[in-house]
Length: 407
Image (cartoon, rainbow, N blue to C red; front, side):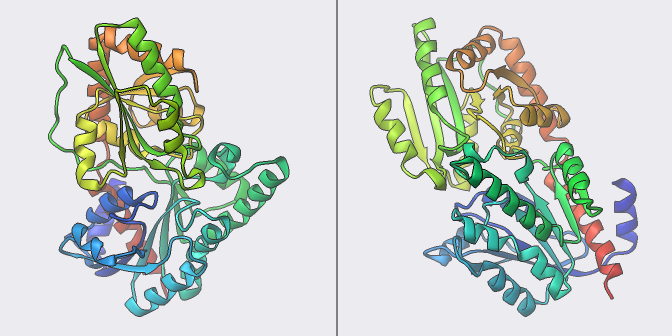
């Protein structure tokens, strides 16, 4: 990477960069990742203009809350719209961008199968337009259990969606460079599709805030889960674990913070949870957490809980937990364990969807504060590993090489 950056600085191009990404206050998945990634390009040598091609809101003026000098936010496509890829192509022709960087996962463009699929034709459209493109792809269908994320209800549907996923992956691979965040994903795509344009592209870490430390003795243990819930993220295991801990530690106060909203595929999920656990007085449901409140949500937590039954790629929440120096309580899932190990993070583990196992993992770190502190330090150190600011230079070095090859 250092060699590439040195070469890039010597062979700089002045470029207009268009990002295709959700962006706050849009609530579309990857909005926060897009926010931090895109802002890391501001004032970089070689960057002339930065455009953010994001989805329309009911009131597009709300984007002004997240405006920054050097970035032009352009809502030009509709979440769940059928023509997003054409709307993006039209905007790209108008802007005459030199390079397109796409921040994607398989549900970026819609919760419905058809609009989600059609939006993923965007890399192919960029190829047709002759615009160099880089995709960071956060998940692949080959490793996702479709039934756990609301994408399949029977075997034939699962096989159909896997076939469709394969075809869409081929369209995504029309991009000049496709970055995947997990080494295993790179191996799978290279072997299955014989793709030579796939690289390992680290997730990168969000901007590190000033570190806050937890006290040695805590009046209350705040167990926080963050995300979109109802498919592979289910909070019942956390709430049941809290009940177990209350019985085990009657003199200790516990609080569960459910930070986020329903997954679009299971609307009404959290309302059903609230009804089921209505007798629990120590549960806070925050609803959607805007970017400016994320820091306080993490800093007020004692442990960050991952109530997952599967994973769909590298976890942005893992990186956020590291940025705020919080210990993680993680399920024993191969993909997630691999990411944690590869990226230098750590935490206590529990058996997936097992409340007693989760309670035991939490209790272990409660009774061994030195181990909790070890994970806090480890995660904070990992979060320093590859800041977005350096990741931006990786993109720019590759963009330069693509422009050199352009006829």
